[in-house]
Length: 364
Ligand code: FAD
Picture (tube, rainbow, N blue to C red):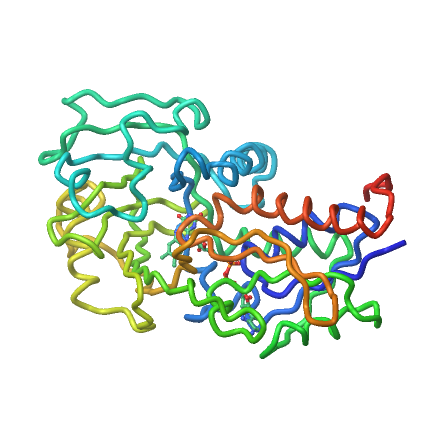
Protein backbone atom coordinates (compact mmCIF):
# COMPACT_ATOMS: atom_id res chain seq x y z
CA UNK A 1 0.00 0.00 0.00
CA UNK A 2 1.32 3.47 -0.85
CA UNK A 3 0.25 6.89 0.37
CA UNK A 4 -0.03 9.75 -2.08
CA UNK A 5 1.22 12.79 -0.19
CA UNK A 6 1.10 16.36 -1.50
CA UNK A 7 3.37 18.83 0.28
CA UNK A 8 2.33 22.45 -0.28
CA UNK A 9 5.40 24.75 -0.08
CA UNK A 10 8.98 24.52 -1.34
CA UNK A 11 10.75 26.53 1.35
CA UNK A 12 13.12 24.85 3.76
CA UNK A 13 10.14 23.40 5.69
CA UNK A 14 8.38 21.81 2.71
CA UNK A 15 11.56 20.51 1.09
CA UNK A 16 12.96 18.97 4.29
CA UNK A 17 9.60 17.38 5.09
CA UNK A 18 9.31 15.96 1.57
CA UNK A 19 12.86 14.63 1.82
CA UNK A 20 12.23 12.76 5.07
CA UNK A 21 8.84 11.43 3.89
CA UNK A 22 10.39 10.22 0.63
CA UNK A 23 12.81 7.97 2.54
CA UNK A 24 10.00 5.43 2.92
CA UNK A 25 8.81 3.43 -0.09
CA UNK A 26 5.30 3.71 1.32
CA UNK A 27 5.10 7.42 0.53
CA UNK A 28 4.77 8.86 -2.97
CA UNK A 29 5.46 12.56 -2.58
CA UNK A 30 4.56 15.54 -4.78
CA UNK A 31 5.59 19.10 -3.85
CA UNK A 32 3.51 22.00 -5.18
CA UNK A 33 4.49 25.62 -4.62
CA UNK A 34 4.07 29.14 -5.90
CA UNK A 35 7.79 29.79 -5.32
CA UNK A 36 10.71 27.42 -5.79
CA UNK A 37 14.44 27.62 -4.99
CA UNK A 38 16.00 30.16 -7.34
CA UNK A 39 13.14 32.66 -6.84
CA UNK A 40 13.52 35.79 -4.70
CA UNK A 41 10.14 37.09 -3.56
CA UNK A 42 8.70 38.76 -0.49
CA UNK A 43 6.23 35.84 -0.15
CA UNK A 44 9.11 33.35 0.08
CA UNK A 45 11.17 33.57 3.28
CA UNK A 46 13.74 30.82 2.81
CA UNK A 47 16.18 32.43 0.34
CA UNK A 48 16.52 35.55 2.51
CA UNK A 49 17.77 33.74 5.61
CA UNK A 50 21.44 33.98 6.65
CA UNK A 51 21.25 31.25 7.66
CA UNK A 52 22.97 30.22 10.84
CA UNK A 53 22.21 28.02 13.86
CA UNK A 54 21.73 30.19 16.96
CA UNK A 55 19.04 28.51 19.07
CA UNK A 56 16.00 30.68 19.75
CA UNK A 57 13.60 28.30 21.48
CA UNK A 58 13.02 28.03 25.20
CA UNK A 59 14.34 24.94 26.99
CA UNK A 60 10.76 23.49 27.06
CA UNK A 61 10.30 23.93 23.29
CA UNK A 62 13.83 23.00 22.29
CA UNK A 63 12.91 19.63 20.73
CA UNK A 64 12.90 20.91 17.13
CA UNK A 65 16.29 22.60 17.28
CA UNK A 66 17.88 19.85 19.42
CA UNK A 67 16.84 17.21 16.89
CA UNK A 68 18.04 19.29 13.93
CA UNK A 69 21.61 19.97 15.04
CA UNK A 70 22.98 16.41 14.62
CA UNK A 71 21.77 16.21 11.00
CA UNK A 72 22.99 19.70 10.10
CA UNK A 73 26.36 18.80 11.67
CA UNK A 74 26.51 15.54 9.70
CA UNK A 75 25.74 17.31 6.41
CA UNK A 76 28.34 19.99 7.18
CA UNK A 77 30.98 17.33 7.80
CA UNK A 78 30.09 14.86 5.06
CA UNK A 79 28.36 16.75 2.22
CA UNK A 80 30.38 19.84 1.23
CA UNK A 81 28.26 20.42 -1.88
CA UNK A 82 25.23 21.16 0.33
CA UNK A 83 26.78 24.59 1.03
CA UNK A 84 27.13 24.60 4.83
CA UNK A 85 30.31 25.35 6.79
CA UNK A 86 31.22 25.52 10.45
CA UNK A 87 31.79 29.00 11.80
CA UNK A 88 32.56 30.14 15.33
CA UNK A 89 29.67 32.18 16.75
CA UNK A 90 30.14 34.92 19.30
CA UNK A 91 27.19 36.30 21.24
CA UNK A 92 27.67 39.59 23.10
CA UNK A 93 25.19 40.58 25.82
CA UNK A 94 24.29 43.87 27.46
CA UNK A 95 22.64 43.61 30.87
CA UNK A 96 20.22 46.39 29.95
CA UNK A 97 18.77 44.30 27.08
CA UNK A 98 18.04 41.44 29.47
CA UNK A 99 15.95 43.77 31.62
CA UNK A 100 14.09 45.46 28.74
CA UNK A 101 10.91 44.43 26.95
CA UNK A 102 11.37 40.84 25.91
CA UNK A 103 13.09 40.29 22.59
CA UNK A 104 11.60 37.36 20.58
CA UNK A 105 14.96 35.63 20.52
CA UNK A 106 15.75 36.07 24.23
CA UNK A 107 16.66 32.46 25.10
CA UNK A 108 19.72 32.78 22.84
CA UNK A 109 21.09 35.32 25.30
CA UNK A 110 20.61 33.24 28.47
CA UNK A 111 23.68 32.99 30.71
CA UNK A 112 23.08 29.27 31.19
CA UNK A 113 21.48 28.29 27.85
CA UNK A 114 20.03 24.83 27.22
CA UNK A 115 22.19 24.51 24.11
CA UNK A 116 25.44 24.73 26.11
CA UNK A 117 25.97 20.93 25.97
CA UNK A 118 24.52 20.61 22.46
CA UNK A 119 26.59 22.97 20.30
CA UNK A 120 30.34 22.18 20.35
CA UNK A 121 33.06 24.21 22.08
CA UNK A 122 30.70 26.35 24.17
CA UNK A 123 32.47 28.75 26.55
CA UNK A 124 31.74 32.02 28.30
CA UNK A 125 34.00 34.84 27.14
CA UNK A 126 36.31 36.71 29.51
CA UNK A 127 36.01 40.48 29.87
CA UNK A 128 39.04 41.10 27.63
CA UNK A 129 37.26 39.40 24.68
CA UNK A 130 34.18 41.66 24.86
CA UNK A 131 33.68 44.74 22.68
CA UNK A 132 33.07 48.07 24.42
CA UNK A 133 29.60 48.48 25.87
CA UNK A 134 28.96 44.75 26.41
CA UNK A 135 28.78 43.03 29.79
CA UNK A 136 29.19 39.35 28.93
CA UNK A 137 29.28 36.93 26.04
CA UNK A 138 29.78 33.38 24.89
CA UNK A 139 31.33 31.51 22.00
CA UNK A 140 30.56 28.15 20.38
CA UNK A 141 30.77 26.35 17.05
CA UNK A 142 27.80 27.00 14.79
CA UNK A 143 27.23 26.78 11.04
CA UNK A 144 26.40 29.17 8.25
CA UNK A 145 24.24 27.88 5.40
CA UNK A 146 24.58 29.31 1.90
CA UNK A 147 20.82 29.18 1.35
CA UNK A 148 21.07 29.61 -2.44
CA UNK A 149 23.13 26.38 -2.59
CA UNK A 150 21.39 24.49 0.19
CA UNK A 151 17.82 24.88 -1.10
CA UNK A 152 18.92 23.62 -4.53
CA UNK A 153 20.72 20.72 -2.86
CA UNK A 154 17.52 19.82 -1.01
CA UNK A 155 15.61 19.86 -4.31
CA UNK A 156 18.20 17.48 -5.79
CA UNK A 157 17.94 15.10 -2.82
CA UNK A 158 14.15 15.08 -3.13
CA UNK A 159 14.26 14.36 -6.87
CA UNK A 160 16.75 11.53 -6.25
CA UNK A 161 14.15 9.95 -3.95
CA UNK A 162 11.39 10.17 -6.56
CA UNK A 163 9.68 13.36 -5.34
CA UNK A 164 7.99 15.31 -8.14
CA UNK A 165 7.94 19.15 -7.94
CA UNK A 166 5.26 21.24 -9.67
CA UNK A 167 4.39 24.93 -9.75
CA UNK A 168 0.89 25.65 -8.49
CA UNK A 169 -0.93 28.38 -6.59
CA UNK A 170 -3.86 27.24 -4.49
CA UNK A 171 -6.43 29.42 -2.75
CA UNK A 172 -7.86 26.69 -0.47
CA UNK A 173 -5.88 23.86 1.11
CA UNK A 174 -8.39 21.29 -0.21
CA UNK A 175 -7.22 22.03 -3.78
CA UNK A 176 -3.90 20.36 -2.95
CA UNK A 177 -5.70 17.03 -3.04
CA UNK A 178 -5.83 17.10 -6.85
CA UNK A 179 -2.12 17.61 -7.45
CA UNK A 180 -0.58 14.23 -6.67
CA UNK A 181 1.48 13.07 -9.67
CA UNK A 182 0.09 9.57 -9.05
CA UNK A 183 -3.14 10.78 -10.68
CA UNK A 184 -5.20 9.72 -7.66
CA UNK A 185 -6.42 12.12 -4.94
CA UNK A 186 -3.89 12.71 -2.19
CA UNK A 187 -4.30 10.62 0.96
CA UNK A 188 -2.43 13.16 3.04
CA UNK A 189 -1.73 16.88 2.52
CA UNK A 190 1.21 18.57 4.26
CA UNK A 191 0.79 22.30 4.71
CA UNK A 192 4.22 24.00 4.68
CA UNK A 193 3.15 27.37 3.32
CA UNK A 194 4.87 29.54 5.95
CA UNK A 195 3.33 32.99 6.12
CA UNK A 196 0.92 31.89 3.36
CA UNK A 197 -1.04 30.09 6.11
CA UNK A 198 -2.42 33.46 7.20
CA UNK A 199 -4.57 33.74 4.07
CA UNK A 200 -4.77 30.23 2.64
CA UNK A 201 -8.41 29.10 2.65
CA UNK A 202 -9.12 26.33 5.13
CA UNK A 203 -6.16 27.40 7.29
CA UNK A 204 -6.46 31.18 7.72
CA UNK A 205 -4.38 31.16 10.87
CA UNK A 206 -4.78 34.57 12.51
CA UNK A 207 -1.83 33.91 14.84
CA UNK A 208 0.46 34.36 11.81
CA UNK A 209 2.24 37.66 11.14
CA UNK A 210 5.33 38.74 9.22
CA UNK A 211 8.52 39.45 11.13
CA UNK A 212 10.38 41.56 8.60
CA UNK A 213 14.13 41.15 8.38
CA UNK A 214 16.24 43.61 6.40
CA UNK A 215 19.75 42.55 5.42
CA UNK A 216 22.74 43.57 3.34
CA UNK A 217 24.87 40.99 1.54
CA UNK A 218 28.49 42.15 1.14
CA UNK A 219 31.64 40.72 -0.45
CA UNK A 220 33.75 41.52 2.64
CA UNK A 221 34.75 38.64 4.88
CA UNK A 222 34.30 38.43 8.64
CA UNK A 223 35.11 35.70 11.15
CA UNK A 224 33.74 34.78 13.61
CA UNK A 225 30.00 35.45 13.20
CA UNK A 226 28.64 37.98 15.68
CA UNK A 227 25.26 38.55 17.32
CA UNK A 228 24.45 41.12 20.00
CA UNK A 229 21.55 41.22 22.45
CA UNK A 230 20.43 44.71 21.40
CA UNK A 231 21.22 47.98 19.67
CA UNK A 232 21.09 51.61 20.81
CA UNK A 233 18.11 52.09 18.45
CA UNK A 234 16.23 49.32 20.26
CA UNK A 235 13.85 46.80 18.71
CA UNK A 236 13.07 46.18 15.87
CA UNK A 237 16.72 46.91 15.05
CA UNK A 238 19.18 44.14 15.87
CA UNK A 239 22.80 43.33 14.99
CA UNK A 240 24.23 40.15 13.52
CA UNK A 241 26.72 38.98 10.92
CA UNK A 242 27.59 35.65 9.33
CA UNK A 243 29.74 34.58 6.41
CA UNK A 244 28.18 32.17 3.93
CA UNK A 245 30.39 29.40 2.56
CA UNK A 246 31.62 29.00 -1.02
CA UNK A 247 31.80 32.68 -1.95
CA UNK A 248 28.23 33.31 -0.81
CA UNK A 249 29.12 36.67 0.75
CA UNK A 250 28.62 37.97 4.28
CA UNK A 251 25.18 38.81 5.66
CA UNK A 252 24.87 41.99 7.74
CA UNK A 253 21.67 42.20 9.76
CA UNK A 254 19.23 43.31 10.59
CA UNK A 255 15.74 43.87 11.88
CA UNK A 256 13.05 41.76 13.58
CA UNK A 257 9.97 43.81 12.85
CA UNK A 258 6.70 42.03 13.67
CA UNK A 259 3.72 43.24 11.62
CA UNK A 260 5.76 45.02 8.93
CA UNK A 261 4.95 43.78 5.37
CA UNK A 262 7.28 46.16 3.46
CA UNK A 263 9.15 44.40 0.65
CA UNK A 264 11.46 47.27 -0.33
CA UNK A 265 14.70 47.69 1.68
CA UNK A 266 14.71 50.98 3.60
CA UNK A 267 17.94 52.93 2.84
CA UNK A 268 18.00 54.54 6.29
CA UNK A 269 17.76 51.19 8.03
CA UNK A 270 20.47 49.85 5.69
CA UNK A 271 22.79 52.71 6.65
CA UNK A 272 22.23 52.06 10.34
CA UNK A 273 22.87 48.31 9.92
CA UNK A 274 26.15 48.96 8.09
CA UNK A 275 27.24 51.63 10.58
CA UNK A 276 26.61 49.35 13.56
CA UNK A 277 28.57 46.50 11.99
CA UNK A 278 31.64 48.56 11.06
CA UNK A 279 31.65 50.17 14.50
CA UNK A 280 31.62 46.78 16.23
CA UNK A 281 33.94 45.04 13.74
CA UNK A 282 36.01 47.69 11.90
CA UNK A 283 38.18 44.91 10.42
CA UNK A 284 35.35 43.88 8.07
CA UNK A 285 35.92 47.05 6.06
CA UNK A 286 39.68 47.34 6.52
CA UNK A 287 39.11 50.23 8.92
CA UNK A 288 37.55 52.36 6.13
CA UNK A 289 34.08 52.45 7.69
CA UNK A 290 31.00 52.02 5.51
CA UNK A 291 33.01 53.07 2.43
CA UNK A 292 35.02 49.90 2.83
CA UNK A 293 31.97 47.66 2.36
CA UNK A 294 31.35 46.15 -1.09
CA UNK A 295 27.59 45.60 -1.37
CA UNK A 296 26.22 42.68 -3.42
CA UNK A 297 22.57 43.44 -2.64
CA UNK A 298 20.11 44.83 -0.14
CA UNK A 299 17.18 42.63 0.79
CA UNK A 300 14.15 42.17 2.99
CA UNK A 301 12.38 38.94 3.88
CA UNK A 302 9.35 38.12 6.02
CA UNK A 303 9.91 35.50 8.70
CA UNK A 304 6.74 33.41 9.19
CA UNK A 305 6.11 34.44 12.80
CA UNK A 306 3.35 32.71 14.79
CA UNK A 307 2.30 34.30 18.06
CA UNK A 308 1.47 30.93 19.61
CA UNK A 309 4.59 29.14 18.36
CA UNK A 310 5.22 26.68 15.54
CA UNK A 311 2.35 24.47 14.35
CA UNK A 312 3.33 20.84 13.79
CA UNK A 313 -0.08 19.28 14.11
CA UNK A 314 -2.67 16.98 12.50
CA UNK A 315 -6.10 17.90 11.22
CA UNK A 316 -8.71 16.84 8.66
CA UNK A 317 -10.50 18.45 5.74
CA UNK A 318 -14.31 18.35 5.70
CA UNK A 319 -14.16 15.31 3.41
CA UNK A 320 -11.92 13.43 5.85
CA UNK A 321 -8.61 13.93 4.01
CA UNK A 322 -5.75 14.07 6.47
CA UNK A 323 -3.70 17.22 6.72
CA UNK A 324 -0.47 17.73 8.63
CA UNK A 325 0.72 21.28 9.28
CA UNK A 326 4.34 22.42 9.51
CA UNK A 327 4.53 26.21 9.56
CA UNK A 328 5.21 29.23 11.77
CA UNK A 329 8.98 28.87 12.31
CA UNK A 330 9.67 32.62 12.55
CA UNK A 331 13.48 33.11 12.57
CA UNK A 332 14.51 29.47 13.11
CA UNK A 333 13.18 27.59 10.07
CA UNK A 334 16.57 26.15 9.06
CA UNK A 335 17.80 25.34 12.54
CA UNK A 336 14.53 23.56 13.33
CA UNK A 337 14.00 22.02 9.89
CA UNK A 338 14.92 18.37 10.51
CA UNK A 339 13.27 18.28 13.95
CA UNK A 340 9.98 19.62 12.58
CA UNK A 341 10.10 17.41 9.47
CA UNK A 342 10.69 14.42 11.74
CA UNK A 343 7.61 15.55 13.72
CA UNK A 344 5.57 15.47 10.48
CA UNK A 345 6.84 11.97 9.65
CA UNK A 346 5.69 10.80 13.12
CA UNK A 347 2.20 12.24 12.52
CA UNK A 348 2.02 10.71 9.03
CA UNK A 349 3.09 7.34 10.48
CA UNK A 350 0.38 7.61 13.13
CA UNK A 351 -2.21 8.13 10.35
CA UNK A 352 -0.85 5.13 8.46
CA UNK A 353 -1.05 2.93 11.55
CA UNK A 354 -4.63 4.03 12.22
CA UNK A 355 -5.40 3.01 8.63
CA UNK A 356 -4.18 -0.46 9.47
CA UNK A 357 -0.96 -0.13 7.53
CA UNK A 358 2.17 -1.89 8.73
CA UNK A 359 5.08 0.53 9.13
CA UNK A 360 7.56 -2.22 8.36
CA UNK A 361 8.35 -1.19 4.78
CA UNK A 362 11.67 -1.23 3.03
CA UNK A 363 13.35 2.17 3.11
CA UNK A 364 14.61 3.44 -0.25
P1 FAD B 1 8.82 29.80 3.05
O1 FAD B 1 10.26 29.73 2.78
O2 FAD B 1 8.20 31.16 3.06
O3 FAD B 1 8.09 28.90 1.97
C1 FAD B 1 6.70 28.91 1.82
C2 FAD B 1 6.37 28.10 0.58
O4 FAD B 1 4.95 27.98 0.47
C3 FAD B 1 6.83 28.78 -0.72
O5 FAD B 1 7.26 27.81 -1.65
C4 FAD B 1 5.55 29.46 -1.20
O6 FAD B 1 5.54 29.70 -2.60
C5 FAD B 1 4.55 28.39 -0.81
N1 FAD B 1 3.18 28.88 -0.74
C6 FAD B 1 2.64 29.73 0.18
N2 FAD B 1 1.32 29.92 -0.08
C7 FAD B 1 1.04 29.16 -1.18
C8 FAD B 1 -0.14 28.93 -1.93
N3 FAD B 1 -1.31 29.51 -1.61
N4 FAD B 1 -0.09 28.12 -3.01
C9 FAD B 1 1.08 27.51 -3.35
N5 FAD B 1 2.23 27.69 -2.67
C10 FAD B 1 2.21 28.51 -1.60
N6 FAD B 1 16.20 30.76 10.01
C11 FAD B 1 17.24 30.07 10.56
O7 FAD B 1 17.09 28.90 10.92
N7 FAD B 1 18.45 30.68 10.74
C12 FAD B 1 18.69 31.97 10.37
O8 FAD B 1 19.81 32.47 10.52
C13 FAD B 1 17.62 32.70 9.78
N8 FAD B 1 17.79 33.99 9.39
C14 FAD B 1 16.77 34.66 8.76
C15 FAD B 1 16.98 35.96 8.29
C16 FAD B 1 16.00 36.62 7.59
C17 FAD B 1 16.25 38.02 7.09
C18 FAD B 1 14.76 35.98 7.34
C19 FAD B 1 13.69 36.65 6.53
C20 FAD B 1 14.53 34.69 7.82
C21 FAD B 1 15.52 34.03 8.56
N9 FAD B 1 15.33 32.75 9.06
C22 FAD B 1 16.37 32.05 9.63
C23 FAD B 1 13.98 32.14 9.08
C24 FAD B 1 13.76 31.18 7.93
O9 FAD B 1 14.12 31.79 6.73
C25 FAD B 1 12.28 30.79 7.91
O10 FAD B 1 11.86 30.30 9.17
C26 FAD B 1 12.06 29.69 6.88
O11 FAD B 1 12.62 30.06 5.65
C27 FAD B 1 10.58 29.37 6.71
O12 FAD B 1 10.50 28.40 5.71
P2 FAD B 1 9.10 27.86 5.19
O13 FAD B 1 9.43 26.78 4.23
O14 FAD B 1 8.24 27.53 6.35
O15 FAD B 1 8.43 29.12 4.46
